[in-house]
Length: 162
Image (cartoon, rainbow, N blue to C red; front, side, top):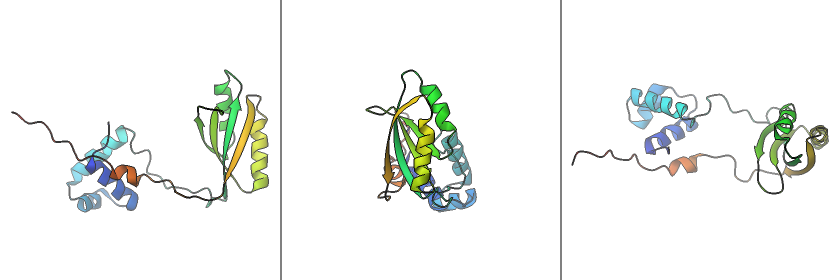
């Protein structure tokens, strides 16, 4: 179910002012506090809002190196490979992919020698057959959601009696 314009405005405002309360959100949006609460509850229930925690940057936590590691795994051993990868704290995310690689990992490291050691640890799993690593040199477009939210349609009007 897509979000509507009010949901979009609510989410954009919350991202711009992450510590704002419900009453202030309602004032900024020009709607009732109950409307804001009901919309938030629905967005949370639908999985649109994933969390309310602080965003922690790997760089700020001492991990300035970002790499994307593509992995080819042994046939039929996906669950075992995923368990092995979950044991590596420097692996932030793992996606199943199509194409040459089976999995794409977002990995952080303290240095390039540290990254080499992390990859060596990954390769100790008998489920991993091959890896290919790309180190990110800079962020050209940081994670963003606002343009997508801004594209939300207006609230559909409810059909009335004819």
